[in-house]
Image 1 (tube, rainbow, N blue to C red):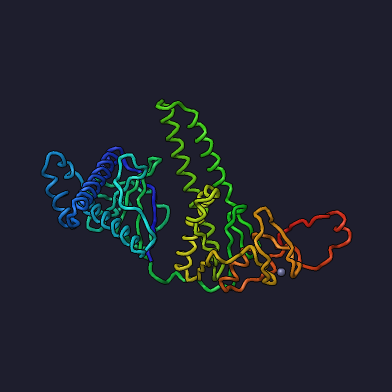
Image 2: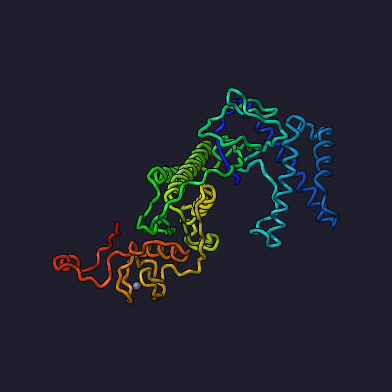
Length: 402
Ligand SMILES: [Zn+2]
């Protein structure tokens, strides 16, 4: 399977200029090719082939004064740009034919795009130097912060500049088998809710960690500061950079949290089941913001690939399963409950159920996993409360069973 590894890059001033040139050339070739194809399509002419475009937009264009500067960068990255456009078209047409999720037609790239990228394939002869730098053709030896080891030598590296002005090298690595973890017995259902980031069928409720909440708080503060700055002022530009940095930090912190949690859950459980989010459906509602913020789909994707990598089972159950309508104890379906109802008593068996844990257990059961459903209960059904307690707590006090 393929995995992506990203490392921070620290290019020198000269290398940053060279990278800016590479981003620019790749963008221009991409846009020229897109324009050539759209023009042909508008005129009812056949779709120009990639080889033809390569000749016209790279080899011959370099000889013209308007595009002579294309010669200042590695020709291989320009070819790659044409292939990337091919892929974008292929994905678009496959989407129209229902072979994959629908996506938009290829769009022109802009100098103002927040993310700039350039891809170096094996043909581009990039390498890692004996001094552990990243050697890029016509750019130089760039300093890399190797935060973890690459499992094998990758063939391709994408250099990215993000909205906060940071540079990254992103490698795609082919990992072989042999990472299968020893079998364990627990199996787990996960409910991704709004109250907590995730609730597990074993009764654990997980909230986003403090480092993420702190980063989010700082982002909000930066956004408020930006909104108070006068349009077109120099201070506004500075504030905008601060917002972009805070955004990047939130994204990093969130990814870190997702990695930690997904690794832990996959290591500790033999099988993991989640409800299919169909986030796209939810995203149109007023819950949209929290859905995006929680980043569930990224988290679920991590669970899925880590399960495949470590020999665990990952199951996604359809969202038609009414996980909050069914008692996880006796299986009786007693209908939907409004969101504010967090705890209820099953009319059939009398169990006092916690909404989130009940859902997590139902997710596991729907996936055919063997989970111990007793954890969904806040209190066992039909058990009279001790006399003293009955007097002091007239209403049921929910408590998570441990
Ligand atoms: Zn019941």
